[in-house]
Length: 409
Image (cartoon, rainbow, N blue to C red; front, top):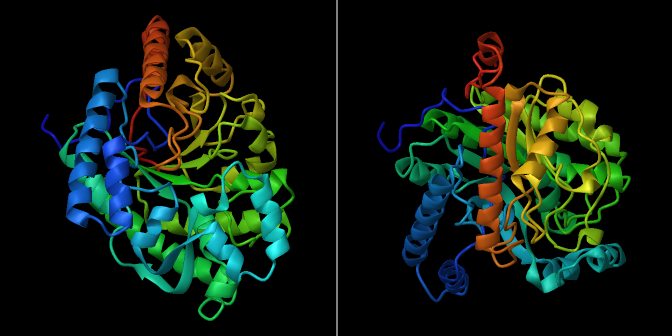
């Protein structure tokens, strides 16, 4: 097999992957800052990012990760990076947003719940008609594809969080009177992106919608920086229906490519008390109606509640917590997977961290050394689980065979 040619049918049981982000090198962080302040060129930054991606791909291969990502090394965070890919979008700090919005008191209440200063977080804000100025993740995928023969996961922000985040009424209303109006164009932008990724041969596309939990755990009241617009003032059920509709329309062009949805409770702080908590149970009927093959969910934190069975879905099971220094043992990880095996067949379970290791480029959840050791623990646990599964009868093994494509999708 040559580089750039993924084997999409020979995944082992309990495939190990990540949610997306990986801590950036100091050199890359410096290059990113210099690019942002106009002190260096895009070409210089790209060269440094290329090195960082290649280094991370090598690490994943050495450790034994089955489905690789580029670690989101070129992104300032999982969401805001789209500002450089879309016409009609401008980056604004939360402090700048505070200056233009009418409900300053409400926005101030949100900032008071955060473990981050308002000037430290930037948000993509819609200021005009949106359209792609370049692929959102297509170029990232093409680079990774040239440097690995492993299946590749491409993470993308979901249509709901993009719409909620970008629609600040005071900046967008001349173009989009409501966030639903903006959502129509967000759907079209993501459809174009998915169509191109599928045509390029993407193995696995993951949409990130962490803010869905906010709707059910806070009764629709915005509590995180991820939704700067305070846009969810409706009944949470209406917002969730909006999210289901948007994602399903995007996925109409996904074909048989494996698509996953990642939902968590926030990943911006190591202070667990600032993050949301509660079972996925209130989201269950909505998640089951989303036309994704896999749900990538937190389960390494008690804040996530009990493991649930989602009809017709694979589970990308969070088995290590990226926000703590403790290295989970393979035995502890196997114990978590055993809970999942009470509800899912072994062919339906993938292993991953709860969230990314560095949601924000300059605010990693953990060091690269500790993050690597967590990946190694997941790989060890997966190998032990496979060995245990191999003692089944041949018929049972055949039934549990894991294939990367879904021919019935």
